[in-house]
Image (cartoon, rainbow, N blue to C red; front, side, top):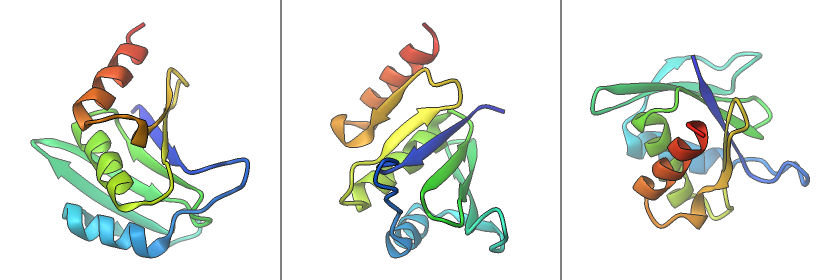
Length: 120
């Protein structure tokens, strides 16, 4: 299954704020699906209009993995950026794109750019 990663600034090893993540999961209505473990600080399922993604937060809080490249994955990333003061990068597993979410004016424009990059 394809996946995408979210990160802040890898050069500075910036970490996601756990409180911002928690608020974002609650606001999106994401459902916890696995307790914290060695490979994952948190794991949630998020469903939107029949599309579902599993969201995994790495224990170091530096990256977040989103299963799939559908509406649910992009929507959660967009929602998280709205709650985060730091610019969030989104990259697909094939490195077709590495976008800063806050540079887009809408979820739709982000998805269009990503789909275009993945289909080139």
